[in-house]
Image (cartoon, rainbow, N blue to C red; front, side, top):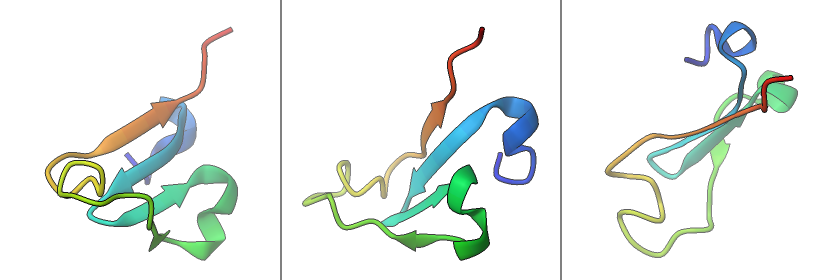
Length: 54
């Protein structure tokens, strides 16, 4: 998904305490510190946010 983010319309991904965004791609995966448990830290799933289609 990261490799084809522009084509897929991916704005950002959150996975295993890390976040990646298309606008900050050069920074790579950054720490994601908003969670307190397995689910909110996105350990047990991948969170994908995509842009709205026009």
